Length: 264
Image (cartoon, rainbow, N blue to C red; front, side):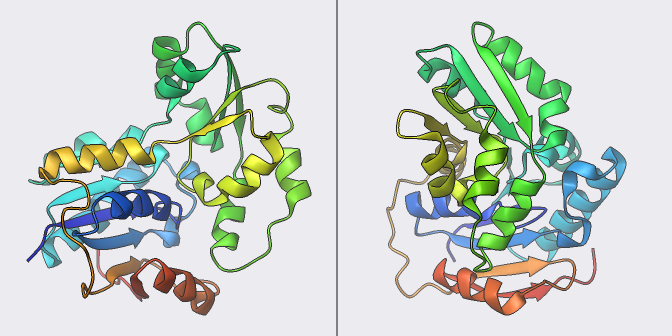
């Protein structure tokens, strides 16, 4: 049996991380799980977030052969990793906003951070800015609505470009690198790029996470083709709105129909 990666998020944003990993390592098996019963994570108390993440991920690791876990959520990654690593015997990879590469790229020394309100306000995020973007002007915008738009897009709903433009307006003309500090946002890369223009780099953590997964599992890029492999498993924690439309998108990503996880 091939190595299996479990990817976890509060919603479907972590699918952007799944796409990056699968593009690099098509020989892996995948499990994708999302805690839509408590979505969005940015509004949860820390104790609840730790309890739910550890419970769900722990239950899936008990039921399935898992070689590595990716917490594909910036909010959860800044809070749950110590507890989860204490609980599991397999490697756990977290996601943090890609502030370091954005600051290194910026010629203007003016970058944007687009994330959830919780990630924008968290002290860990400020520590990243102080460490890696101390010489940059950092414009921060927290948006829960953009997370919802990403969820809607994956269910086939048309994106309102004017609404995207309003959310991004604090950045336009001021930055040359924009950090996508939520895993939902790369799902909207085309729409964000349209507003920001060709001269602005959209920087996320997907490629870095894929490289980390390959390093920890000691596997080569696309060493094994996935032709004939079963679709990855998908689990949720509550009934899914517009489930049929979501399942269409999941099938396009070589993932199975979503199943309800009842015990965790």
